[in-house]
Length: 241
Ligand SMILES: Nc1ncnc2c1ncn2[C@@H]1O[C@H](COP(=O)(O)OP(=O)(O)O)[C@@H](O)[C@H]1O
Ligand SMILES: [Mg+2]
Image (tube, rainbow, N blue to C red; front, side, top):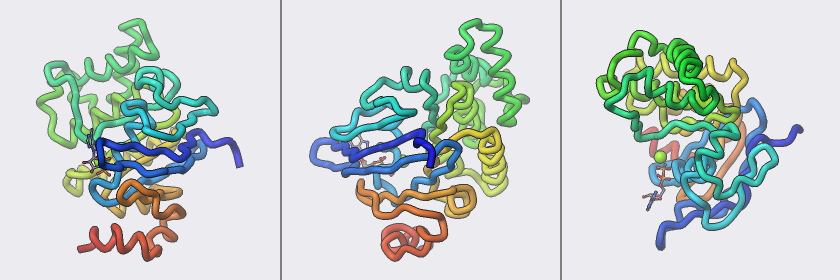
């Protein structure tokens, strides 16, 4: 087995008395798609925040490409190749779609012209090119979620964290976004994805990690996880209900 691209060891995060993450350990291999699931409030977004540098864990260690990146700020992690989307999308609403992505492209292409050219590629890749000159605030939710993906891709990450990019979309939009995720996978990117929609997570993940009340309660191939009684009790039963 090759060296993991990401290794999270014994990570905990508390907010006052609330233990949002409790001693969570897992790893992601290069080019793997790992799904992260669990009920609302399980700690999925908190884990993303810890891995991408938006939150410092109370305890534990995050190692990315063999570098201890625990507590490193987001811009440094982005420079090292950790890109992410936000569950609650927050584009620069007053800027155009193209400018939003160009800002992200500047990380890799300090020349503005080159950054804009790279941003165009990302808009074409994510199916947003026809909206390039629209204000970001004018996009539908599906458009804003795509914009989040385009911005994250513009950072040219090796590890991409996708936080509920399909949730909330209608079935047609959801299918388009699933196609986009599969296209990203074909590019050879490593993906850690949080998603509630089971057909998405079960179909695209190589492996799934399950959180419940901040603890990892299961891990394995989609079929193993789906058959795990603890997972059914904590999550799938709820999702099916
Ligand atoms: N910044 C914060 N301050 C206080 N509590 C938080 C904060 N972020 C998350 N939490 C709490 O931590 C728990 C895990 O939240 P979160 O990671 O968003 O869960 P998930 O993404 O799995 O739905 C929840 O109980 C949530 O209310
Ligand atoms: Mg969340």
